Length: 153
Image (cartoon, rainbow, N blue to C red; front, side, top):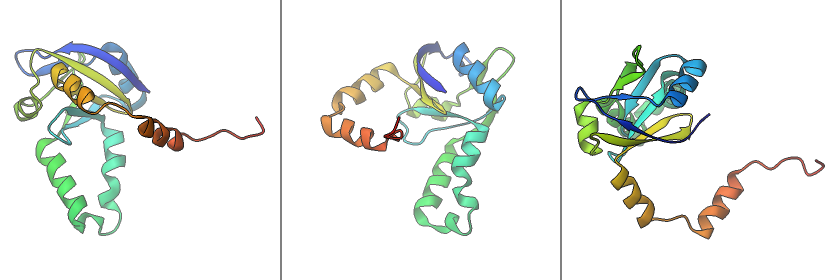
């Protein structure tokens, strides 16, 4: 599982070195191939290619790719996204369009979100979290989504 937060630097060529614990977990579970995109322009998402293929496989099911919402989603993520591979030094390229819209430069936050990573400008992430903090209702909704164990345990 990809969990936690690490600070990383973007080099002059636009590459980011994936934090070691994340890189090791990705390579062990999925290999070196990634799909890198932005779903909202706020951050850059880094998906192991196998995770992305499963998630985006929705378009393989019959004619779902003809649904306007699915089509918009696929157009957006594929216009901004590309397949990349982790290099021998643990780095991947974040393209200029992705870095520009997410305002990523120099030092960034790399957040593990279970099966993929998000790369954030620290200030933008702090603003987002401050503007919309978690509420008691949010926690109730989250609690309802967590599978409950057998009551006989």
